[in-house]
Image (cartoon, rainbow, N blue to C red):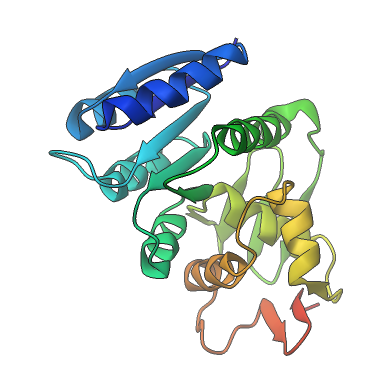
Length: 227
């Protein structure tokens, strides 16, 4: 049984989420306080976190950043705030998805299932025995480690998936639609966030992000890994 942690200070929304997910056979735990939610997220054995953005004591951004340093479990951010800057910030901190209130409970369940399926694949149900090294950059699929000149670089789950897809196919141009389909798997995400993830990825692996030597932009088409 998959375990889901809901960190939400609005009791009615938390209970609604719990009821719909419980009906699908998930084991649910609810925390209404940000500080307690962070403690539970770091200490518990959960398969996915549904994380409200505005929480007492510790906000969702802080929780997301702290959790992502420890684990790659899916994080689904939920907020009444619809500003793009909040979505970009949340995804940049490592959230896997962002949904705004009010939302359809059925859509929430579908997103949860999709991210859990993707995470299962990452953990090994479809593991590839493959590692790739190009000009000082090494990427290992099994361990999900990325090294730059033997120094380990920390990537989010989607940053790693984008990088591995590109470096495994040097010279091939991937459209944003292809990247979205292969990395996000479902159709619920916002395709415009691909640009954000690529920017964050470049900041971590490129010597000069404004003049990338690894991930090139093919204007009007997409991205490719420089062979």
